[in-house]
Length: 306
Image 1 (tube, rainbow, N blue to C red):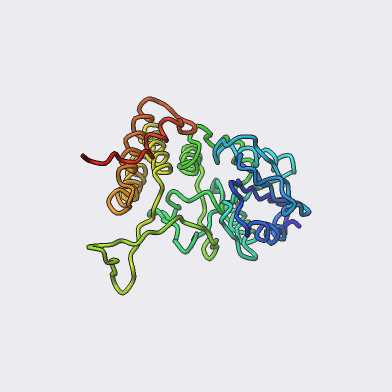
Image 2 (image 1 turned 120 degrees about the vertical axis):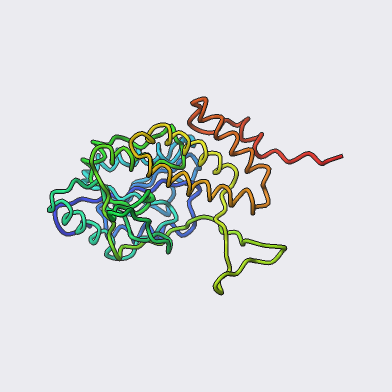
């Protein structure tokens, strides 16, 4: 079904090793959008009888090409289906009833004010409130849960496939910002979203508790750390002249996440190697999917001391 008005929203979901509850969430999502496009990024999850539902399109890529490529394939299919807007979702995200209608209403209100808007973003994802700048513009919003008008996608261009994974949403935001667009935060629009693996912060073997709450660090595998460091370095080179304060803030937050993994996680040596390899490849202009030899070096076990 279509939401009220003339909009035709198509949801796009990149898939990699589809979780077992995805068919049920896709089935529920169909009630809010005109169609759902699933693109499997080379994991063999699609096609699947579980997704043979009215209004659901399945696309299976032959090889793992990264989330940006999967999104671009999904957006092109959405265009073919007559989409006026695209809802981008991760495979572990869930939108509540009425979400799409609320987001579209916010986009209409922003358009009526005459301000160019790149899209609408939820105010909260996975229980974490979106960060905002002083002028209430969302700071580096995640890609999942955004509704973007197709003309904006045409103007900004495709998602940056050379980044493969990580910072793809940041790159799109920065390019839209350079064209004069801004994103609208929609208050009371929240999505359920997996934010990653939390590991307890331990001091002398005991979990840290502050203000009565156990404290954790968001863990990223060395594989992901490589992309975080490499792509953040690339973004700095591309956009620091345009958005210096924005880039410094993003770099600081990325550093805090990576430092937390290095200091508190059990795979410190691999994390450090990932940082080194990410910085090296960014400096050399080596982008795309991580080289298998680089990944093997990052993950190689430490040699025992004699």
